[in-house]
Each structure stands twice: as structure tokens, then as C-alpha cells.
Length: 129
Image (cartoon, rainbow, N blue to C red; front, side, top):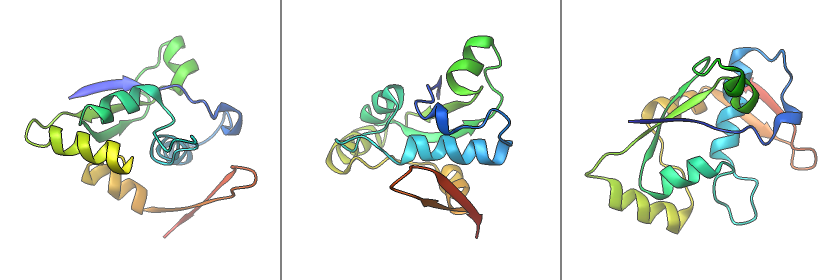
């Protein structure tokens, strides 16, 4: 398993005092819902791992509490799983569909929150389902 932090390029929409649940939701949106014209993940590190066939395995809040980690990613890190039996399939699927392959844990986190995106402002509203 590989662990990487990421840069919040959507930092202006993140309140410094945001609670962990909303911070987690914001991070998942950033990694799973592309704002890029080409449809690939917003984060270059995620694109690298996913393009190599990895699966987005886990999100870890408060993982990198160094000053650099807080500045870059609010301390959040993600784990990518390289399953040798699925690498080629995931690699091809990613470049064909641009869809992020996710673990059941990530899918469950995503499913537990209904996210509405306002396409005009890119602000996000959350409701529990």
C-alpha cells in the first residue's frame, strides 16, 4: 500500500475551522469529482497512482501533522492499493473511463453523504442520507 498527501487546490472553499466530517467530504470530492476539462483527477499524485492501476483504498485524517502537511493537505493522506491481479485492468479502465477505482471503504464513506454541487459557485452542501 502506498500513502500520499495531496494539495488542496480548492483551499479557498475550505474553512480553517471545518469539522472533520466536512473536511473528509471535501477531500473526497476533490479526489473523486474532477473539475478538470480532461476529466482526470484534480490531484496529480492521485492521477499518477490511479493511472498506474492503483485503487483509492483509504482516507486518513490527521495523518501528516507537520507544518508542511497541514499547509498542503490539512493533514489528510490517502492510501493507494496496488493489487497485482487488478493492475492492468484498473489501468485500462482508468484511461478509458477516467473513473477512480475505489475500495469498499471509500464507496461507503461516499454513500453515507449525499453531496449536492452547485455548478455555478462550486460550493458544496452536504446532507446525510
